[in-house]
Length: 479
Image (cartoon, rainbow, N blue to C red):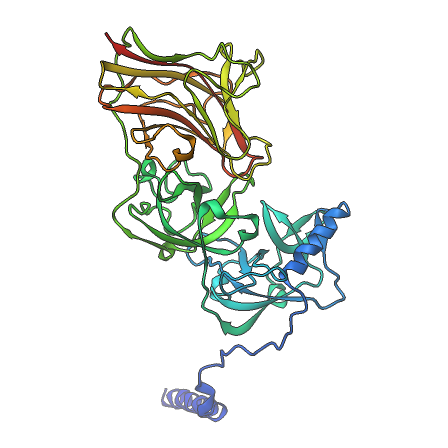
């Protein structure tokens, strides 16, 4: 027994001596984690890459494939992060550290598809990278430029075993300055780049919602981000249902937000995607919601008539005119016109219609405004009308009112316009071709002289904008 104990002790002692003889003090130092300068000189610009795609399309292809044998490099900066789960297996890079641009080297961005999670651990926001384009391809994927491996006519992900050979880190981590702009001034060139909007807010009708935690949120949640004043253009704030902040309530105030301009999965609308909630600075508690005229709904319609139009006297395919209407095209080429149809989307005889689908307009805004109506001369006023749509999609129809407009087209946009929320206006989700009653909208709480407007606003993408129809407008009062 004593011999066994002695042999055991001797074995342990010998092992310790062996280990201590093999490991010197300096071997316990922290490993060198400094990134070595790859000493790469970029020989292509982002514009060169876009030109490669354009040349391929001109030749009948849908992606541009780079030569495998020639070393081609671009230099960019990472602007996306998957740390909060709002991006997945992708890096977004842009060629500028700020919002600057010039004709020879415009500010552009690309999405790089990589079959790897946790990319932010290696490629953090601001990290300067070089992308080796040998054998890769550039194309449009879900509406934005993407770089990846060519597979027939599509872009596939770069795989885990090879991605570090294509996306090479530089020691520099730059401080990025987003381009500060407005929702209405966005262009396709801003896609895949870092953008900042100032003085914006979430639409008042969505303040009770989370970013993407509702039962109706499938894959992504979409919340309406609007500029102040609130009648300015809007954009959808898109949040993944895998984001770690999906169940947080959307911010209630107004302020600035920083994110990346992109397109939704179906390439129908512009979307804005943030890296994390730290990109939102909504510190102004004074929201810019429009004023409301909300008397609710009435139970009956009076027999007196203040205004009425069923458009039967209008000339079809011509702009609505007469009867005191102001038909104003604020942006684009489309106004409210008379139409008649007996097809699958039948009109009610002759109806008023507006739509910018395939108009080619970068912006479409059209107003149809009633004549001035004095609400002090009688009581029990109500409003009724009917609406229908032909795939409204990204376009919107609002019912507005103003008590300070002077009746001139020049001052329409400078007047104060509020909303009348009690009226029902057809939704894009409603049955195509059906007509929907507004309900009996109570206006008895209105005072003074007032104008009522039907305002159409396109999404900025005429390929995704739809059409609205309007008819049987009546403003009555109790005699």
